[in-house]
Amino acid sequence: MLVVKKFGGTSVGSPERILNVARRCVEDYRKGYDVVVVLSAMGKTTDELIKLAHTVNNRPPKRELDMLMTTGEQVSVAMMAIAMDAMGVRAVSLNAFQVAMHTTSKYGSARLKRIDTDRIMHELEDRKIVLVTGFQGVNKYDDLTTLGRGGSDTTAVALAAALHADACEIYTDVDGVYTADPRHVPTARKLKEITYDEMLELATLGAGVLHNRSVEMAKKYGVVLVVRSSLNLSEGTVVKENAKMERMLISGVAVDKDADRISVIGLKDQPGVAFRLFDVLAKANVNVDMILQSIGRDGTKDISFTCSNGDMDDAVRAIEANRERLQYKEINFNEDVAKVSIVGAGMMTNPGVAAKMFEALYNEDININMISTSEIRVTVLIDEKDADRAANAVHDAFGLAE
Ligand code: ADP
Ligand code: ASP
Ligand code: MG
Image (cartoon, rainbow, N blue to C red):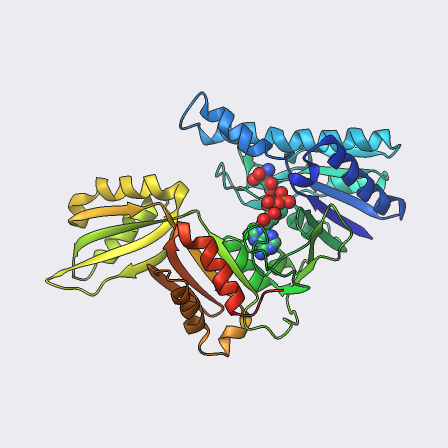
């Protein structure tokens, strides 16, 4: 039995918590299992390292920021190995370089390409617990990279796939995947199971409990995930291909406060205009999310779109730099917006789901700025100040409350 266990920042946030995690891992090890443990940086270390970088430079070079951030995970694995040693258990800490976790070159949001399993297998055969740094990799220049915030989940799933693990357990500070973020929606309920597709939508739309790439990868390689608490023995949530969704219309509500809206006003109402605008944005590496185009009037039209807060400056700069090519009247933007989404496979076969969501928002007197949908989700863009109230209202309107 080979098990990959991943523990997030809060779960290793103090020496006591590290000892707690060590005990849980040693328990499995003493049952005779092969145990591979992926760790995040302790507590808020990653945030603090980013802040630290900004004290000396407002725009820290991405390569150096990755070099800095990856130290956080290295502290965790070393501390864990030291704690396990005190328990008389043989353990070895490895960083991404030592394992050889190959990624694409892009600093700050690299993708895992290939993991060498030789070193890990060798250590397991030697009956050691193997402790691996989450969130980091090595690119073709032999530089350290990071996988994007929350990326340790992806490290764990990738390792589980590469090692053909029998189980992949994601330990965090909540008891599992809930119908909404339990920190903001007090009536949220823990799900027993959820499908990859629904989890992927929720994670992409702001449910930070799992890194969305980890879900994508779990689906691709058929890795069944269990999300559970590191602080109690509660059962957790299973993420897999087919789940019995307890016959619910929707399985969850997600909120993304990281969204910003940009509107380009007074564009010419003629062919090629949308192409030119989104071509400019693509070349500036801006990921565009929701798009809304107004109906043309008097030969002009407006196009609004959303992007993440991190891309906002680049987007505005690129549009302004191409003013002549794009020929618009003005551009305005709003950072105080949020996306609220409902996700559920049930909506494929049930009309009226969107209407029910809009009614819940209407009852709360919340105005909708933009709407987008897919087969299994409906997303609205609203004022950020209304986001939590909207999430609670929609959540309870669909009968998800406990
Ligand atoms: P870790 O450090 O363990 O990776 P994260 O902070 O990344 O932990 O993720 C856990 C957090 O995700 C929870 O504390 C919770 O507030 C948040 N969260 C958001 N949406 C959900 C959801 N649908 N179910 C459970 N937790 C959620
Ligand atoms: N420590 C990293 C972060 O805070 C990775 C992770 O926690 O998954 O984003
Ligand atoms: Mg996380």
